[in-house]
Length: 143
Image 1 (cartoon, rainbow, N blue to C red):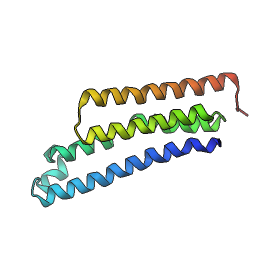
Image 2: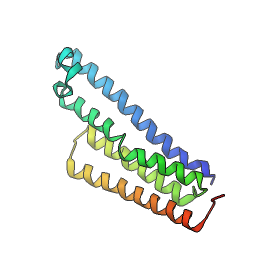
Image 3: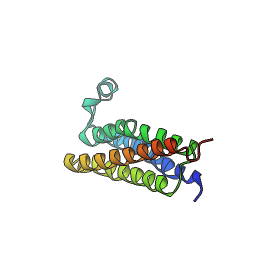
């Protein structure tokens, strides 16, 4: 497995974020067309949007929280030459957890399930951090 495979789950995570922007645009257009929102009020206050729009908007905000740590960890892991099978599997697990989290968030928004999915992602990030720190301490792949 090539060390560059660590970037496939990164691209998948970026794709998820971009898809959420598209879903947001579609839901906003639908709400405006249905007369569910006053555009002048919405320009200044996101709270006037319908719930299905707010869910997506909140999910997009989430895509710039824990995933930022994911991006950095993937870059660190790659740069120290530690992007082996374990790191790539962990990266895919994180990306998958974010896809399922987004599905729940913009759908049912069942908070206990969202919390479990969030914790799975955080545990994967912790495992990636430990892997990176261990590889650095061992001098594996570091030039």
